[in-house]
Length: 296
Length: 224
Ligand SMILES: Nc1ncnc2c1ncn2[C@@H]1O[C@H](COP(=O)(O)OP(=O)(O)OP(=O)(O)O)[C@@H](O)[C@H]1O
Ligand SMILES: [Mg+2]
Image 1 (tube, each protein chain N blue to C red):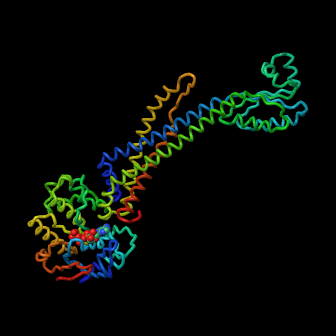
Image 2 (cartoon, chains in turn purple, blue):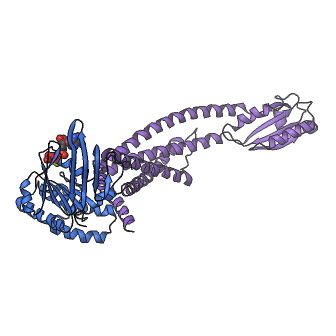
Image 3 (spheres, rainbow over the protein chains, first blue to last red):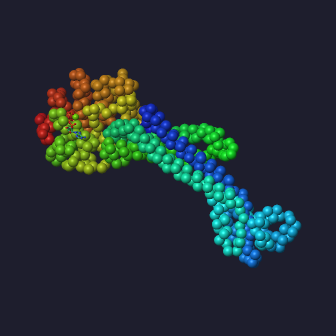
């Protein structure tokens, strides 16, 4: 108990002194936490937004006239096993004639231009695919030999692909910037921490502290700094979410930003705390190596 | 126990760059002795004490302190050594933004000694070194002599087996110098081996049966 108590006391003593430097450190990691959180927030929301733009669509398949029923049913079986694809309707050529003559199938009449030989096996698919799914599905359907014609709205697919492309470009630039900023801020954090504690660590070392006693309170210290920064970063993120909504929840975008999910918040906090711990580990290792020439 | 050698240095060679400080130095110190260490400024007194403290590993040679052996390229952390062997550094090395008390109990905390135990020892040490009145003061507001006494207190609070004192009277007035020698003598009589680096060989007169070692030309001379 005595020793563990002393380790906690040492952690508290780190927290109690050199507050100004700790404030700088918290500021640095908060910015880091905020930026990575902002990235996560925009990433998840934009992804959901783009994906939503491409869901709930209809794809109509026309088989070739000379394909027989067993082949069509085989194809249908395969198609229905694709995730996110539901076979809404299926018409035999007979059905098609009947419906056409009764004139009560607006869908088929509407697209009869796209398929002059309307009297064929026809299936209407309800597609609920996110992201690249729709264009992949079309590509896949085109490989089926019996399928003659596929109707879908190409504008939506193209728009999605373009939107996705632009977004991916912006995202990779953002990731690059984020990595650079993270490295710079992390380096600053580790340097400030090192400078702040170098003397105390040295004194502990020359007065008989073990490796554990040097390392563990330092890690706790880093974890606490990380946790405080995570909370501050998330609070700022929460505030900025309102501003982002104010910015984007207008015509024609109508992008509503949801805050991070509890899981996202957890991940974000863990990330920040780990950064804190990692920085403090590096700092104490460096102090140990450079000031007293010993590996921790 | 008898005349056990608590400090043994064998064939020590140490240099900083081309500056050779010790060339084939051998020192034996018996348990419970009081040794004065003299030498010109820059002769290597501090370096020798740091070798005994495990802070510096000699470039070659063999060191045995309080039963712990090490030599060049020593990788061990040696906290066990430094819990038995404490040092009063010439430049004090105090935490300037902490109080006198905080500085003094630091080694006890590093050893995992409980707060109540620490407090008991602290009160005695503060009284012994006349620091009680300024116990709550921050170190950056202390005079040179006060800082020196804080450094001394931090070194003796653990009741060390060996005390390495590097110029501990450099900032003290005459009365306090004599007083400190008496305090150290008291520890010495209770078994602490003391190595005392100083510019003032006159101090030897105050301690009976003490030895005086002189560093000159990278060698050791036993003066008496
Ligand atoms: N880390 C170091 N790197 C390079 N040179 C050093 C180092 N430490 C000490 N020296 C040199 O070694 C020599 C001995 O230094 P040391 O501090 O041991 O002398 P000293 O006898 O204690 O002197 P003083 O009486 O002034 O305290 C000096 O010339 C010093 O410049
Ligand atoms: Mg010196």
